[in-house]
Length: 272
Ligand SMILES: [Zn+2]
Ligand SMILES: [Zn+2]
Image (cartoon, rainbow, N blue to C red; front, side):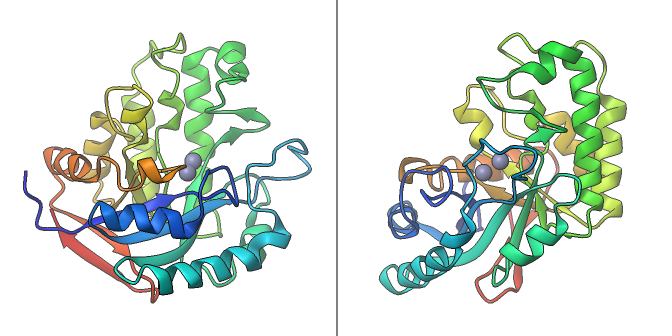
């Protein structure tokens, strides 16, 4: 496929959260791959009370430095339009932190990495799946995901919607029919006005598909939920990874366009 749309990547991390490089290094990698718009979306707002040990989000006292680094990257790599964003963990009561910490950002990804205090995608902690079984874990995940959609934090796009597939090839396989759960997610995203993200990360994790999987993506499309497209890169080697394949994948699910946040806070719709 030869997409009419430019390559964009609306989901990248730096070492300010759990990535390995700077905004500048990521932008340079984006430029090498012909990527025209890159969103810097480091992790925000994991609850200190719930998860005192977790340190994968940007520390509050580094938010200013991250903003400055983004400005330097814009000057150093002018070929790539850099959008200031964050990937925000949803949890009960996160909204005040989201508001305070994301000041100045124009693009917010919503994400559910935890259901209650149990991790969804931590290879060292599969208690969510082992404790409840994969079927029940999925229902709990989808419920939290819908509540994240409904959050007054008004996330622009929901990252990796079926993250609970993460260990489906590693012993945490769902045996029930998820059609009803998927429909609930699609209706919720539609009713709350959210985008959902098509992420190439699942391919890199060996899942053999993208997030969301084909069945769920078709349901999002049937519910007229618009999409964003990102790599979820945690290092320069993955910036803009697989984006054109993601375009073809979205097209195969019936999508004819995707939306892209821009540095000035506006949005552009590109045809696939
Ligand atoms: Zn994430
Ligand atoms: Zn991410």
